Amino acid sequence: MVENRRSTGDSRPATIGASGAQIGDVRLGEPAHFRMVLVSFLAAGIGLLAGLIAFVLYNLIGLFTNIFFYHRFSTAFLSARHNQLGLWVILIPVIGGIVVGFMAKYGSSKIKGHGIPEAMEAVLINRSRIEPRVALLKPISAAIAIGTGGPFGAEGPIIQTGGAIGSLVGQVLHTTASERKVLLACGAAAGMSATFNTPIAGVILAIELLLFEFKARSFIPLVIASTLATAVHMQLLGVGPMFKVTAMDFGIPHALPFYLILGLVCGLAAVGFSKLLYWTEDQFEKLPVDELWWPAIGALGLGIIGYFVPRVLGVGYDTIGDILNANLAWKILIVVMVAKAVALVISLGSGTSGGLLAPMFMSSAALGGIFAMGIDRIFPAANLSAGAFALVAMGAVFGAASRATFSFIIFAFEITRDYNSVLPLMLVSVIADGIAMLLMPRASIMTEKLARRGLHIHQEYEADVLHQMMVSETMDKDVPKVPADMKVGELADRIARRDPEVCHHQGMLILDSEGKLVGVITRGDVVRALDKDPSGEVSVLDAGTADVVVTYPNELLHDASAKMLRNSVGRLPVVDRDDPRRVVGYLGRPGIMAARLRGLEDEHVREPGWIRRF
Image (tube, rainbow, N blue to C red; front, top):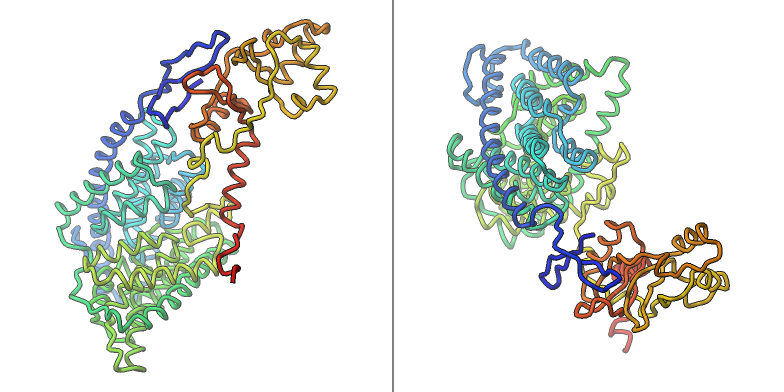
C-alpha cells in the first residue's frame, strides 16, 4: 500500500497494524521529480530529432516537386504552380495517389489522413503506442503526395511523425503510459514548432489536442522540445517567420463591428468545411472499387482542378504569403478559396496522406481577404486591411474547426509578431469557436473520425472536484464500529437484525478497549469466518484484517480515492495524523460521490441572487 501525503509534504507510505505502528519507506518507482528530469532530457533529444525530421521532409518535398514538375534533381523548396507541363499536369498527382494507395494498403493504414487524429487515437486508445513503421512511412508518403501536387501542408505529417518518434522512445525505455503520452506530445509539439517557427503555438496545440492536461510534468518537457526544435529550424531553414508579411493596420477600434461579423462567417466556414470533408469521405466509401485506388481517384480530381488553377498544387506557402500581403485581386481570391477547398476535400477525403493546416490557412485567408474587400466596396469609409482580415480569418477558421482556438490565436500572432493582431484574433476566434460549438457540439474536424468509431473525446478542461475537497468535508462522522472482543456470530446476528449501527455499512472498524483502531472487518470476512467455523466463536479481530489502509481529515479526496483503487477497498478509516490509531471519521464510496454531487450542484444549481430582495 502506498499513501500520498501531498498536503503535508511527507511522501512516506503508511498502514495501521494491530499494534498501531507505522510501516513505511516503500516507494513506487523513482521520485516524481527524478522522472520529470529524465523525461525532460528525453524531450530535448526528441525536439532536436523532430527539427531534423522537419528539415528532411522539406527537402524530400522539394526533391519530389522538382522531379515530377520540373524534371530536375534538386531539393529546393518551390511551388509547383510554375510548371510548364500542360495537360500532363493532370496525371502527376495520380502517380502520387497510386503510390500512397499501395503504401496505405500494404504498409500501414495509419498514414492516411492529416495525422493529428491518428496521434489522438494513439493517446486515447493505444496508451500512446505508435507503430515504428508509421514513423517511417508517414513522412515518405506525405512527401510523395505533396511533391506530386497534393494540396497539403507538411505540418500534419511532421506532427504525426514527431509524435511517433516520441512514442517509440517511450516504448524503448521503461516508462509509464503517462510519460509515454508526454513524449509523444513533445514530438508533436516539436514538429509543429519546427514547421512554422511557432514554438508557443506548438506547445499549446499539444496541450489542447493530445495531452488533455496542464501539469508541470508535461509542460516543462513540452517547452524544452519545442524550443530546441525551433532552434534547429532557425539554424537550417532561417530565423524569420514562415510567412513574411508587411505591416498591417488592424483597424482597432473602428473595425471591431466588422470583426464581429467576420467571426460569424468564420464559424460557419469552419463547420461547413468539416462537414464537407467527412461527407466526401463517406462518398469514397461508397465507391465499388478497392480502397487502394481511392487516393488515385481523388488525385485525378485534383489534377483537373490544378490544370485550371495551378495555385492549388502543392503546399502553397507562397500563395498564403501573397494573400497576407494583399497582393491578389478579389477575383483571384475567390478562385483560390473555392478551388483549394474543393481540391483539399477531394484529395484528403480519398484517404491520401497530407497535412490539413496549410490548405485550410490558404482558403480561410482568402475568405478573410474577400470579406474585407467586400466591406470596403459597400462601405468605402471602413478602409479595412485585406491582409489583416486574411490573417485573422486564417487563425479563426482552423481554430474553430479543430477546437484548438487558443493555439491558433497564438499561432497567428507568432506568424506576424505584431501585438496589434491580438485583439481581433481573440474576438474573431472565440466567436467562430462559439458558432462551431453550437452547430457541431460533439465533434470537431479532428475528432469526428474518432467519434464515428465510438470514441467521444471530452476537450474541455476543468478542475477535478476531488482535487479541491478534503476528506473532512465529506467523511461520515458516525463511525460503524465494533469492539475487538466481539464474536463473529454476534456481529452476524446484529447484521441480520438490521442493527442501524452496522447494517448500513459493508465494513466496520474494529476498536480495542481504549477506542483505538486495530482492524477492519467486512461482511465478506464475516461470511468466510462462518463458513470455516459455523459456531461463530471466532473474534472479529481474527476474522478481519489488522493491515488497514487509512486516510486523514486534511488529505485530498483524490488521494484518498486513489488509495481505494490501488488497494481494492471500498472504505477507509479517517484517523488523526498525530495519533494514527484515533478514529475521527469514516470515508466510503458515498463520500466520494458526495463530492461529485457538490461539483454538479455548483455547475447547474442556480442560487437566488440579490435582485430577488427587491
